[in-house]
Length: 350
Image (cartoon, rainbow, N blue to C red; front, side):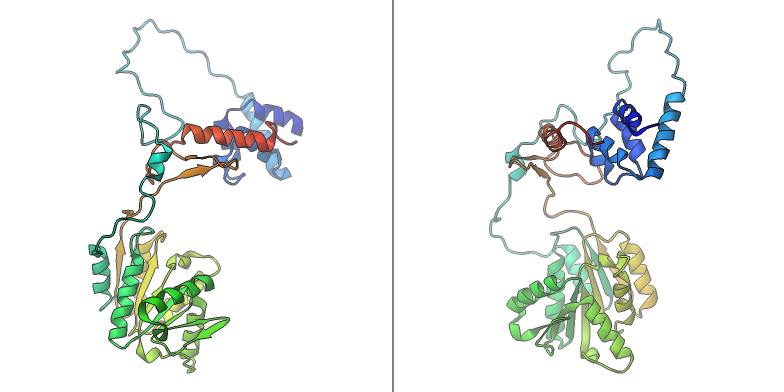
């Protein structure tokens, strides 16, 4: 089958069939329209192109199912009919009103002043840190930073050294500014590959690789930080444990961390926090407690900004119900099609 012949056959396939052909072959194929999907299939490597040709030939060689015999039975009443499955999974019914831009943007801005009251899980995490390691796995915006700040404050009061690690130098610099404003510039220092300020401060900020190297030096007898007074190690963005290249740094840091120091791991996207807590309990002298929930303090909403500047709700519903399905807003689908038509000219490239 030539490429032109395959292109013509692909044009006559349904979008669902095209997605089946693209599965495990075209990345993010589920987001593509028919025109772009055909173009991507035609641009695959020769071995995949041959496989698709064979699948298309097998599809056309299959006998068509026989037509159903007309039934003389009375038609079912509407209430007894089996509902048709919608092509898009949605938490909203067709009769539900579509969300508007006003609803999507409602509540954005500076909230009204109110006194701060810690959540129960925040107080629980801080209490556990007196005798245990803690993993805090909660959604973004829930208040993980409060747990870290309160734990740092208590460690300073007990004259214990605190080390805060992050995966990025930029984040380390940001935390230096933030912590200096809260605890005072004389109380906070930073150690990165290209910066060393106030290294004898009770609160030290550094990348995880720097701490791992310092722990390496400590095991060989070369102590560069006051590990004897180390009381708390905070590992922010600890989902990096799963990183194929850098994850080993987080693992080794946890393994070599002094036993008298409490470990506080923070993340909004750890996939298996229970397993990590069990692993830390098995390798360290203190147990590891898990604080985890999926209740978002800040609602998650989605919008679509077209290159022409038009902003529209991304989904039919105002908030994104994770794990409960979705349906695109009709205006967003129209803009998607418009953008594809403008960029591809309504045709795929051969």
